[in-house]
Length: 252
Ligand SMILES: [Mg+2]
Image (cartoon, rainbow, N blue to C red; front, top):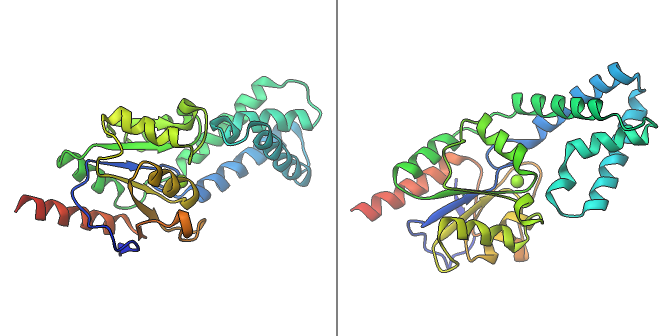
């Protein structure tokens, strides 16, 4: 069910809807776990590394890259994680192996990341009713484009922004301002922001005066304080129903 948390809002037909990608359009964690496992197995086969050592070193490598790069797109780069992993394990610059592990990671990830039920139907209906739709997502453009292409959504959106383009992850306001600019809109328009992460999607959505919707899932609690969304929902069919009702009332 779609639940309204902010009673001061009356929903109207939106001028555009902006979507996060990871954990909003599909479940991130099951895909990530399978991909990490596939890389672990491959690294063990290729390099003969003890599983415990591999595990500890991978965590260390991830932590180092994240602290080195801060909240930027490349702080999520698996290629950098695997490169550093190999360095920390005492190998010299093993570029082919790093690339190979990265390919294994994303190939496995994508094969295990189905689009959530109801997403395609909602997006198709929004397009049918001429509501512009856009993506604002963290991580590098290459992999996020690959994900959307894998979902067969490569020609669905009117605008696409990654944190690589603006140089900083959400909630940096530049991500949200850039998507408005690409859509030819501004903060006075009736834009909706749909995402799973209160601290990034909801806060960022608010920074451009968007009506904010949090998809509730396992990783994050319902946002509170300045992260509090205007609406929460569990299933895309709930958001879809709400949108259909608005279309009906605006057409009669
Ligand atoms: Mg997300």
